Image (cartoon, rainbow, N blue to C red):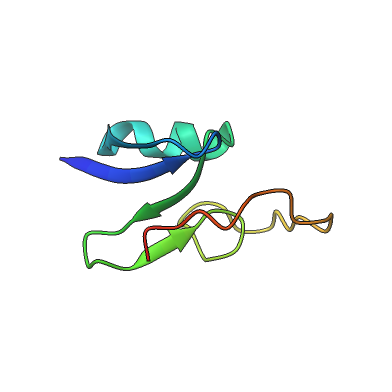
Amino acid sequence: MKIPVVFADERRGLVKAEELQELIEQAAIVSFLRSDGECVQVGVDSVRGMGGRTYRGPERRGNVLFC
Protein backbone atom coordinates (compact mmCIF):
# COMPACT_ATOMS: atom_id res chain seq x y z
CA MET A 1 0.00 0.00 0.00
CA LYS A 2 1.32 3.48 -0.86
CA ILE A 3 0.85 6.38 1.56
CA PRO A 4 0.64 10.05 0.47
CA VAL A 5 3.37 12.10 2.18
CA VAL A 6 4.93 15.56 2.14
CA PHE A 7 8.71 15.38 2.26
CA ALA A 8 10.86 17.82 4.26
CA ASP A 9 11.73 19.67 1.04
CA GLU A 10 7.97 20.22 0.42
CA ARG A 11 7.72 17.69 -2.44
CA ARG A 12 4.67 15.45 -2.36
CA GLY A 13 4.86 11.77 -3.09
CA LEU A 14 3.79 8.23 -2.29
CA VAL A 15 5.81 5.83 -0.14
CA LYS A 16 5.40 2.18 0.77
CA ALA A 17 3.83 1.57 4.16
CA GLU A 18 6.90 -0.35 5.32
CA GLU A 19 9.12 2.69 4.54
CA LEU A 20 7.05 5.19 6.54
CA GLN A 21 8.57 4.58 10.01
CA GLU A 22 12.13 4.94 8.74
CA LEU A 23 11.28 8.17 6.91
CA ILE A 24 9.66 9.56 10.07
CA GLU A 25 12.75 8.67 12.13
CA GLN A 26 15.02 10.32 9.54
CA ALA A 27 12.85 13.48 9.58
CA ALA A 28 12.48 13.01 5.83
CA ILE A 29 8.72 13.70 5.87
CA VAL A 30 6.67 16.41 7.57
CA SER A 31 3.16 14.99 7.09
CA PHE A 32 1.25 11.99 5.78
CA LEU A 33 -2.31 10.75 5.37
CA ARG A 34 -3.54 7.88 7.52
CA SER A 35 -5.74 5.21 5.96
CA ASP A 36 -8.80 6.82 7.61
CA GLY A 37 -8.03 10.06 5.74
CA GLU A 38 -6.66 11.91 8.80
CA CYS A 39 -3.73 14.20 8.11
CA VAL A 40 -0.77 13.71 10.49
CA GLN A 41 1.89 16.34 11.11
CA VAL A 42 5.08 14.56 12.20
CA GLY A 43 6.33 16.05 15.46
CA VAL A 44 2.92 17.56 16.26
CA ASP A 45 0.35 14.76 16.09
CA SER A 46 0.58 11.36 17.75
CA VAL A 47 2.50 8.81 15.73
CA ARG A 48 2.75 5.20 16.88
CA GLY A 49 6.14 4.39 18.38
CA MET A 50 7.26 8.00 18.76
CA GLY A 51 6.32 8.61 22.41
CA GLY A 52 8.69 10.38 24.74
CA ARG A 53 10.46 12.55 22.18
CA THR A 54 9.22 16.08 22.61
CA TYR A 55 10.80 18.74 20.44
CA ARG A 56 11.02 22.01 22.36
CA GLY A 57 12.71 24.22 19.76
CA PRO A 58 11.19 26.66 17.27
CA GLU A 59 8.97 25.43 14.44
CA ARG A 60 11.22 25.13 11.38
CA ARG A 61 8.86 23.51 8.93
CA GLY A 62 6.60 25.36 6.57
CA ASN A 63 2.86 24.90 6.76
CA VAL A 64 2.83 22.16 4.10
CA LEU A 65 -0.10 19.81 4.61
CA PHE A 66 -2.53 17.72 2.66
CA CYS A 67 -5.47 18.98 4.71
